[in-house]
Length: 259
Image (cartoon, rainbow, N blue to C red; front, side):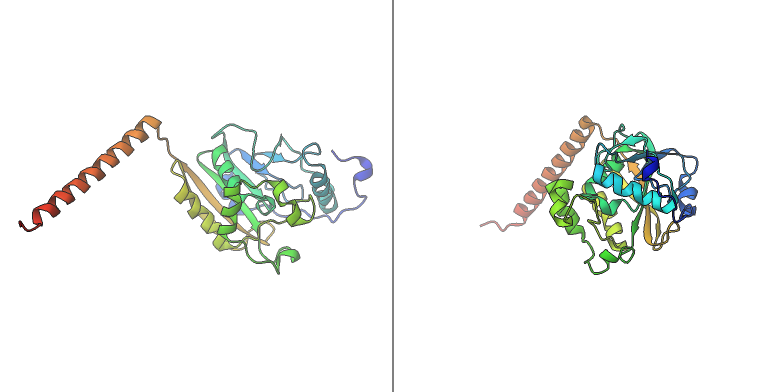
């Protein structure tokens, strides 16, 4: 909670409109909002996941002051936690929602896996990321490739690994998103995971919230494969492959000329 001395006497009076797309898809559900901002409300039934002074004093203070300067209020945090390590059970929430958060995470693909973990079957991931020109600092930077995200995913990169890159502890923009990258992330997930699938159900070139980002919505499909059943399927597939190979070998031998 902000102290009286830390609250600006005046603020910009900024409160962005709610998202019609978010209401269309998420009304009536109960979900998690990662990194909420008082000046950027969604008006949905959510529990807020975010940093606390104890977890990250520097960035928490920076973000707190940003909210106070914009609207004079601070969004309260219900679940102290990191976006890539949310303190809730598997398949326990209807959706995960975030706006202008994903670019601040050092390992975006690992975070996406975490969001899939906590969302119920047929739940949703609703993400808004800034356009390249939303932040002047990003305009001259190259767009981030899927290969770069995979590099950090395979290395299991964490914040501390990327502090030198940012020149300090503040969680700046690690990723410069593009529409292509957002679509590629969904395709990558579906190629590399067999217990869940991301079905893209909505995309906005320009989001209907702040208006300086891209919005994407995935519905999370989950599949249950008991280990015994999976092993049986793999065994049957192996036997079919061996049988087909043996049949092909016999057929080839029959066609060989007799010396």
